[in-house]
Image (cartoon, rainbow, N blue to C red):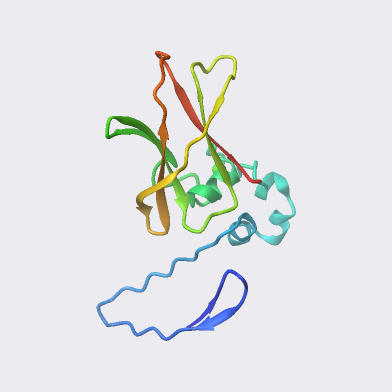
Length: 162
Ligand SMILES: [Ca+2]
């Protein structure tokens, strides 16, 4: 079997598969351009309204940059659950999210706000940690949300491509 590595070089490996085994090939990608190339045609790649980071061709509310981070198909709104979730663990609030293995070209910033009115969001310095596997080839990541004196606290993940 010939494999193409992320740097474009090729390598050959021999794989012996037993009659009762299942071979699963994970078509990993690492950057946004590679992800675009997997899902969009050449004419679509030239059209930022379809393949651009802010575009949402499947109309599910997640722009392509989020689809890339979550490991979702940007052409299909049907998916295996939301890409972001909140939970409580060890007496602390957490925000979890999916991150396709190998995605390293996005910046993720936790922001909090005491209100959704007025748009005042405060950056919170936290380091995301891997908490497990959300799906094959998809890491479950989490960030700790700091305690707040406010009776209400809204959280969001700001995802950008530097
Ligand atoms: Ca979308």
